[in-house]
Length: 314
Image 1 (cartoon, helix red, strand yellow):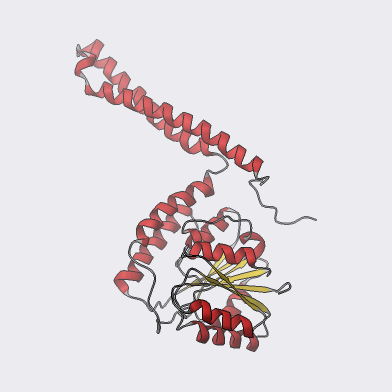
Image 2 (image 1 turned 60 degrees about the vertical axis):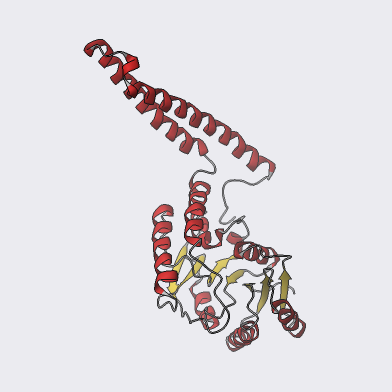
């Protein structure tokens, strides 16, 4: 394959009707704009004829290759595998369902400059169902932006361009692909969002359901912790411990006041039991914070990975 300037990663799951027209359209855009790119298809355990079609495409095109999973591992795993196989200075991700428009790729690449490390597509005029797709997506985008502080209107758009030296420093798992801009933002990447064309699905069936809403909320907690507290977990657990211990002290003081000044025995005050409970919880969170600090320091030492990213050396 050699070193290519661009690496285009396309996860595939049961998209046999779209693969040939997608590759034809993508090739036309690359040729028209004189862009040199490797195209990496990641077959995520498709059960239709996708693997056969991808094999035919790769046989006829030297700049294309396919990774095939043994089963369906999910879009995050597919993107992660593609990143590992890529060699370009810029990495582009896009869907295989042809709703992302390959014609937007040159414009996104132009937006990558000295002041930008990630260009994220924004499906401003999204061609999807309002209640099953657009509304849940809007709520998720607002929640992610609020929690992470990385303000984007469309986290769910797969069409994005990344500087590879940022993306290759990230370990993603679960369903973290939608959070990549936020994760890279925590690392110091400069992010820009631009409107892109979004087309209605013409062939095949959507692979997304309402269950992703709950997954987004759970994954968001992980992203928030990994982004802000991975190198200092004691701040999170210790702060929570302080909260419970503080109110435990307040409740204990109220209990003692009522005993000595109002003559109410401690056994007759349920608030004292709450104070004991809060004290126990506070101590447990403090111990969790210390254990987390030990684990984090061990993690960075064993993997020989610093908790920082160097921008340049002069």
